[in-house]
Length: 212
Ligand SMILES: C[S@@+](CC[C@H](N)C(=O)[O-])C[C@H]1O[C@@H](n2cnc3c(N)ncnc32)[C@H](O)[C@@H]1O
Image (cartoon, rainbow, N blue to C red; front, side, top):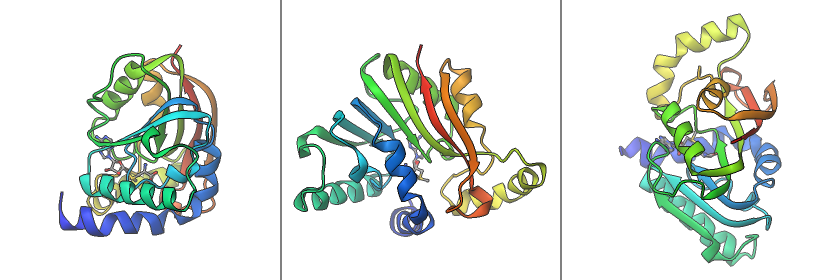
C-alpha cells in the first residue's frame, strides 16, 4: 500500500463519511449471531454492533486500516463502549474476494460502503454467499450508480479521476444487481440520495439480502 492509502485516505474517509453515523447505527445494530464485515476499513462500524452479535469478524486488505481498527477497538474497550468482550472481535488482513472461512459459517454479513471498491465485486459477493448459512443475511449500505440520467452520466465521466483519488472506489457500481447475480434474494431495499453524503456519491442502497 502507498503512503497516500495508508496515512491520508483513512482520515479523509472519516471526514467524508462523518455524516453517515446514524445510518451506520441503523444498519449495524441489526447484525446478529456470528457476523462478518468485509472491508471493515478503519473500524468505523465497531461501536455500533450490539449484543445481538455473538462474534464480529472483520476482514480488510489494507493492513494500516486493520491496525487503525484494532486501535479503535482497544480505545472503545477502555471506555467500556463495546457491546461484546474483546475476544469476541476478530480483525484480520485479507480480501473479500477470497475469504478464509468455511462454507455456511456466518449468520450475518455486513457490506458497508465496500462494494464500490472491491476490484472483483461479483467474486466477493460469491464468497459472501458461500460463507453465509442458508437463511443468513447481508446487511448492506452501499453507494451506487445513480438512477437519474444526468447524475449517472456525470458519475461515468468523473469515475476515471475519482478511482485513484478514492483508492479504487467506483462511483457507478450496480451492487443490487451483483447481489442478485450470485443468488441473493433482496428482502428489503431503500434507494435514496443520502442527505449527508457528497452529491456525486450520495446515491445509496440500504437493506437486507438473504441467502435462500
Ligand atoms: C470506502 S472504504 C469503507 C470502509 C468501511 N467499510 C466503512 O464503512 O468505513 C472501502 C474499503 O474497502 C476495502 N477494500 C478494497 N478492496 C477490498 C477487497 N478486495 N476486499 C475487501 N475489502 C476491500 C478498502 O481497503 C477500504 O477499507
